[in-house]
Length: 142
Image 1 (cartoon, rainbow, N blue to C red):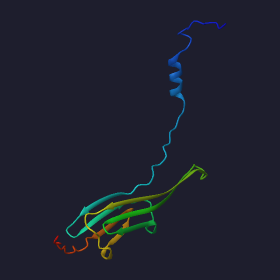
Image 2: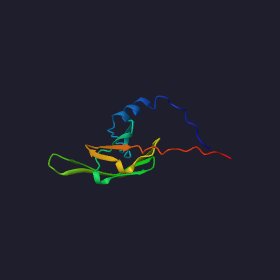
Image 3: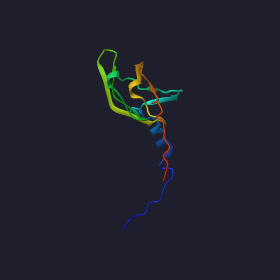
Image 4: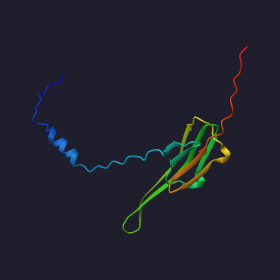
């Protein structure tokens, strides 16, 4: 048969356990977020202007594709972070690799032959001229 023991509320000190857990050293490191391409899009009379923020990427790792009014910007992101101690001995080295892509659709098709692109200080600047409006013809329905 089991023996029942009376509960002594003073035998367990919940405050002592709570304070002890606060005194423990702890360190939280959040993983770095997946790479993202942030962009600004504006429209002028005959073109669109795009400024895309892609820091830490080489110009050769950026790919811009235009298909009619659909624009896709993609980049392969590789970064390496190294921390050294006082004596020059490496204590930690982290690498991040990823692929980021953004696609958006414009109201008018883009004239691919006149597109201008430049990349400086982590900012990709695109000038996307609108394709000349093709004359529309009304079709008579019989």
